[in-house]
Length: 135
Image (tube, rainbow, N blue to C red):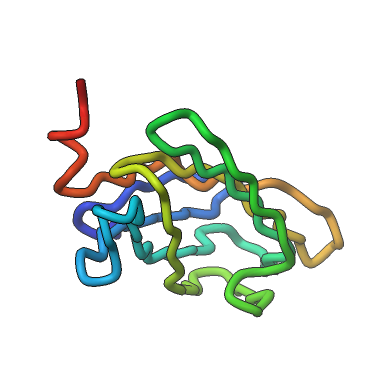
């Protein structure tokens, strides 16, 4: 079951859903600071237990500047998901433009020690200022 307003994708029986939220109270458009939170839901729809080992993000702002973020696990954890289990976490990102896009992948490891990539769906980061910023 998906989350309303979420971007969702299934790879190798792992469903990743992301719901971005613009944080008006943390953003300062006059200073070129726009901040989003995003909620991630990872669901193991397969028959074997998997462990999330690494994350890879590509964050692109409205001017085409791209930042890559690679690291172990998510929010300091390497969650283990048995069949049917769900892991959720929240994180965030700042941009210097009123809109952007994020996309990425997780490195998952099966019980047998096999590493495989799971896609994180591309999702847009749009602030209320994004429409007025388009030329």
